Length: 345
Image (cartoon, rainbow, N blue to C red):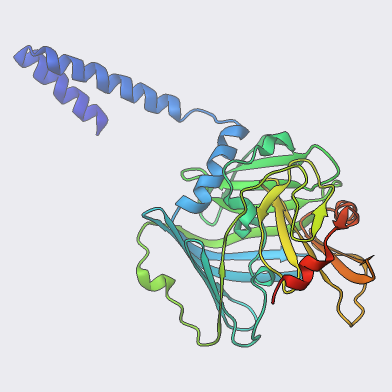
């Protein structure tokens, strides 16, 4: 089509002798040259720059599987970006019925067979965690990016990236990005010895702008649980929470969100790929186990503290190694016990 346009303009110039048409020919040739240059090989940093925007700004529908440890689940998803607003509907394909619908910063969860449940327990990590929504994280400071090669996932041509952790405080990742949009279609979380701890992959996918409003309507009957996604703005070296302080965290992890957790507080941290949350709350009367447990790449570390004759329970959960979770938990300093009495009243 471009060649026909250039030929037509050149013919018109020769026939009519118009200088303006000659300039158009030069412009068309320049643009064609630019297009050819733009299709050349890309490095890993180029694809990383496309990852964040593509996750939000690409519209698509499909089904993906998510596996960690011996737990495997699948979800149907419709995702639309329109007028600067992200809309998303997730429907579990296994087990109990339910759905999760997001519009902008508001998320509504309906799981009638389970009653009230925390959204963090049903929204998978990986590409649908809040960590992946950031476009400002310099992940190459904490991971060594490498372009591995090409592949094909769910019928789409993709490029494969390896992100090797530069320290022992976080896991390595492998990402598969669709070539035309940069959309993440597959990912692995890997341990230091190369073992795949978590796996995400689309089994069917249609990248399209033809998504109707009906695809984002809640259809499940049941009690709706709403949550506002409100990330914090602070990035101080040792952010002070209500009543407690985190004295240490891995380099690169900055505060990403601060949801409430009963009579206590939870703060999430992200390095642009991985995320973990810290929960501090008054201890319950029922004794809970302490120490670390892990499912796939997700570690849960629990620790009990006693401050001013009050017992507190610290929980660290996220895609970090158990040793990292333990160091974070042990760095918690409860410095205002009265603050916990005020929360939740």
